[in-house]
Amino acid sequence: MVKEIERAGIPVVHMCTVVPISLTVGANRIVPTVAIPYPLGNPLKTPAEEKELRRGLVRRALRALETEVHGQVVFDK
Amino acid sequence: MKSDKFKVVHYLNQFYGGIGGEDKADYQPEERAGAVGPGQALQKEMGGNGEIVATVICGDSYFNENVESALSVIIAMIKKHQPSIVVTGPAFNAGRYGVACGAVAKAVRDELKIPVVSGMYLENPGVEMYRKYAYIVETSNSAADMRKAIPQMAKLVTALSSGQEVSPETHGYLLQGLRKNYFHAERGAKRAVDMLINKMGGQPFVTEYPMPFFDRVAPNMPVADVRKAKIALVTSGGIVPKGNPDHIESSSASKYGKYDITGVKDLTVESFSTAHGGYDPVYANQDADRVLPVDVLVEMAANGEIGSLHRYFYSTVGNGTAVANSVTFAKKIAQELLNDGVNAVILTST
Image (cartoon, rainbow over all chains, first blue to last red; front, side, top):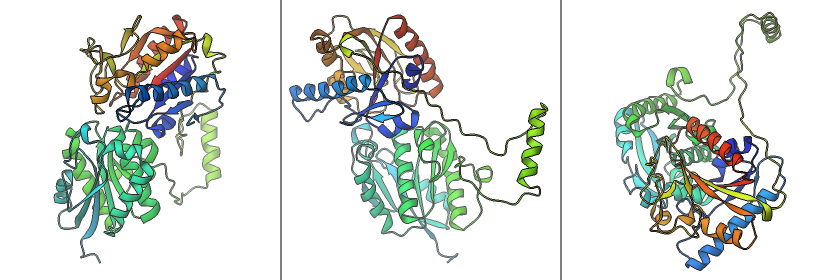
């Protein structure tokens, strides 16, 4: 799905846990996420901490969207 | 040596290992003596030739979230039995399991230098990533194929262990993309010129080497300023309004949903859940923001960090969903997003 959205001309960032699958499939902007059942959360943290974690990852995704890339890039920090 | 039984170690996930379902996908590697689950059928098919001396079981999520450390433990467990061959899976179309089966195969090849037999459906991501490292018997996309997959795997295991020649045609495994040299009656130069003459003359010709098709899409130019951008959310994690009104399937989705989140500030346990059958749904059901980050994006739109959050999100279930279907969904979704003036997309997957 990521590639079809990219093909239509819309910049897209893939936030996903199993990064090797995303790389193989061909996403260009990739942000690794926390875990398979909770990519943008962590039930071991308090709700406030979880939300802050989520904000951080989404902010990283927004930075990825603003970054020029010439191939596949994993934004892991 | 031929009269000795060859030793096999079998790798399984938490489900086939009899530990549990999705709720046990975080199970750490464990070793059992002898054959477990489908290994018992495999043992029977191998007859007196080979023996599964041990089975290593690991949860699919644990493996994929801790690849290096899981592999190091798993390889140590396998190594001490000094098997002559390892079997992983079969994984059919289970993506995480296929990736684990393939990664274990690669590590076994690299470190133990013995062959590995597995079984997967053609579209399993494990195939594309690891086909060079294992003899992957081609299976159908469902575990109902176990009864055909096991005998084929057993046949391949026995052939490899006795040093027999194998090929995709004779033993039903997926092309590995490995080159094997052989002598042809005619020189390559002559064959190439003959082929070129045919091609230029519009005559039929058959390539000796099909070019691999790597589908890559060039990345689009970045968003100039997200503070002015309209961002849309799409997910393969199956987040849907509670009750799954469009009945999106938990596996092999035949459709996607489009949902209006105008006025929604937060996805709650009462209002949203996941339809996805391929991961433990507990955490996403408690708080769907953990898969579709609506809460933080709504705040960011309110405080100007982004221009706006698109009123619709699109959702489907990525579990075993046919690639062709995903392409069709996304083409339609992309067209609507363009019509709605969306500048960028965040797509979340589990």
